[in-house]
Image 1 (cartoon, rainbow, N blue to C red):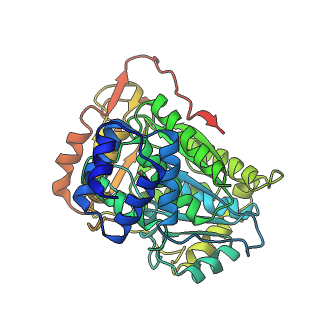
Image 2: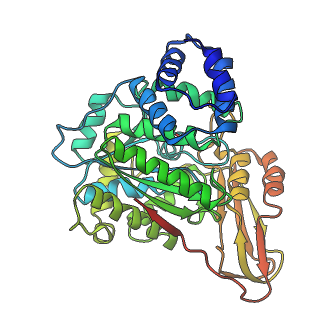
Length: 424
Ligand code: URA
């Protein structure tokens, strides 16, 4: 077998054989297929797609490229959530301790942000002392008690995906349904969770801008999970507006703690509870009451113990950016649109995100929203506050936000539901 014949086959829209897929993933992981060859193949997949059979085999080959974790010795059922990524998407932070407080174990292997979407690990790293990298033994200890762990995936988990994802990121081949589905599901299946809930985003701030594509991605991932024995469902959720009132690392931690304290923005609470109910159902804990666990402080208790177990100080003051700048409403009326992509881009330019994997992020940078779609605003009133340590970034952030808001003179606003569908 050789790489050129596999690239040619996909270039010419042929269906790859199982042997071709197994060979190329294995050879790429071993370093026997060069990055430029894999880039060409990724572009051919991007342009010509893959059948469900090819996606299933590609996913299995990526799982087999590394180790599989086993949580069979834990006394509780395991369940996990994965979001396809969005702006202000801090849901993992309150969700993992909430579901653990209701009796499940939550092994939440998370990533860092790239581009306009934030990353869970970057957010948590704004807590003084908190560590994302744990050994497998440390991870198991936190999963036993307090029951939820949020940490970086070890090097051994789906290493083919690690290499391929980094390559896709710099070759314009991220936004491919077969490559996204196999990338996400290979990691989640190798992680060894018993059940999985996918939060598949659609709208301007999501990878999949269009709902039909997002639905197809969700259905593909649900099938992959169930075929590998992981009970999987997906919620299709709106990402045309940022979630909550903040986008940025420490800003989002602060908002998540508000949710755990029984408050927080209504949309963040709604999605956290909906995903918690799905996760608990997947884990067989249908009698659990996640709303009660938020209001009685038990989710907050798990959060504090989880942060402490990973070296963080849950009582430490969170970093704040050195400079702020307020963007005012240009007219009076009802805010009818606040574009998620624009807010994500502004937060990124302010320093909350990174352009390359190795770039640092600013803990305090980001965007705070003073109004959400549906709210009445007055001309000249604060609409957004921009936070950064590097004030040179303000004009670039404002440029990103130039067409982000629409204010209508009268109440011509029809709310979009946050949860659009359930698949599975
Ligand atoms: N997240 C992943 O892990 N992989 C993708 O391809 C896209 C988002």
